Figure (cartoon, rainbow, N blue to C red):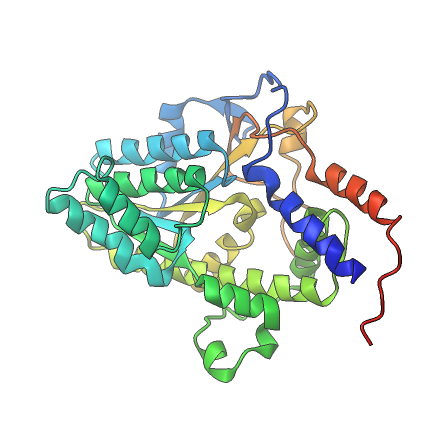
Length: 346
């Protein structure tokens, strides 16, 4: 019983980043700077775009709840459009099954709807995408990008497995799914023990140092299934857009964790289609405590993988919050130590 009380306390703390109150912001000199990690030199926006444009796939890796990250994504996509490009926009936050709904936005625009001001259309789209009970602020970030795609006749697509599939894997694990469920999941067959251990250590850190055993295994199963599907989706988007005029890259809107150090999704795309060129621009919040540039560029030392920095380019921004949710969790856990033993349910 006490374990489940811990989990009930932990979950809102871990997910609190989207609603945590802001503390005093640090005026870090890196904020607003763009760094080429291979040269460790600063670049301006024009130089950044000149470097990004030749690639087949451009990842604009975000922290989901940071409004500055979404503003930058909007700016980059608009720049590509202004340059005569027609990028395909792939979203982690929507599933492959949502793609027809996202493509309907282009049809609505052609029918004369003003996407940003048509509240009835937005409400319907939000409901159909299953976002009715999600944060208004989070929805606004992605609706802004979806509207940009629709207004410019860009293909907007979902990349991920469905929410129902995620929940099933997290509950059952891949081995616990029925055969029909397993057949509907794509697998790259990539299985590296060093990467698995690395990700499980991250899951443990996110959960404030707690290792939940079988739950950690199932979380990794979910992570793998999602990365496999998103990699396949990106390869398919690249292939389908090769002959489209005007042409454009696949622009991927995705969380940093799926792209860090060229792993997660990026290495799976490389595995499936080695000829596709990829570049990762990581929207990077400054750390809670002051740090020098070298600390942000530290390569990952992982057996079997070349040591590389977190991304090809880092664009530094302010943090959404400086609070550490694990500090609250530790305080809550300390109080719980005074709880009476749980009564037997026998």
